[in-house]
Structure formats: C-alpha cells, structure tokens
Image 1 (spheres, rainbow, N blue to C red):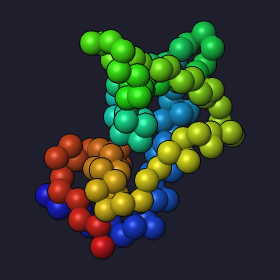
Image 2 (tube, rainbow, N blue to C red; image 1 turned 90 degrees about the horizontal axis):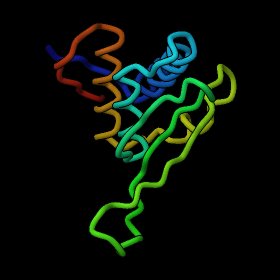
Image 3 (cartoon, rainbow, N blue to C red; image 1 turned 135 degrees about the vertical axis):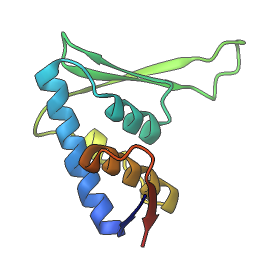
Image 4 (cartoon, rainbow, N blue to C red; image 1 turned 30 degrees about the vertical axis):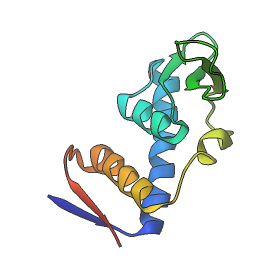
Length: 122
C-alpha cells in the first residue's frame, strides 16, 4: 500500500500525533513505542525512557566529542511532560525529505494502523 502526503499535512499531523503521545505518557505512565521511535529519530538518541516519578522523558545521546574510552559516553537529557509546554519536542522536528517520509510512516502507524505502507511526499 502507498500513502501520499504533502509537506504541510505531515507537519501538522506529526505535531498532533506527538501531542497525543505526550498525553498517553501522562495518562498511562509509560511511553508508547512509536513515540520512542520518534524521539530516537529526532534526537539521534541511543535510548529513551519515561520517569514515572518525575513525569519526565529521559533521552540518552552519545557524546561523540569524548574519545577517552572504548565505551561510548552517553549524556542524559530530561524533559518534563506537560500538556502545554513541549517546545523541546516541537523544536526537534526536521523538514528534509527523508525526515518527512519517516514522519509519514509514523502517521500511517497511528492513524491508519499501516505498519509497512510506502510513503510518498508531494
């Protein structure tokens, strides 16, 4: 199956879906798997977890500047999950063609329950 999107449709839909994911975090005290995929993609993260106690999303990003060890150095950044102030997530969105195709796949999973649909951005 193939799904066709235009750029503005993807940008609007992915922000709405991200808002739904944040609400799911607050309501269920866990992070949806598709939201983990989105955050990992946007932040080039190694891991993503939800801190139930503090209601924060913790994102582990590898520090490529530090070369002093054989093991990667992971910096953890935490962002609060709220219904109103989530600029940290909105500012992480990208707008190149490959990014829009990835977001289109997430939209397909959420809206249409299509796991492997091909996405074409017009």
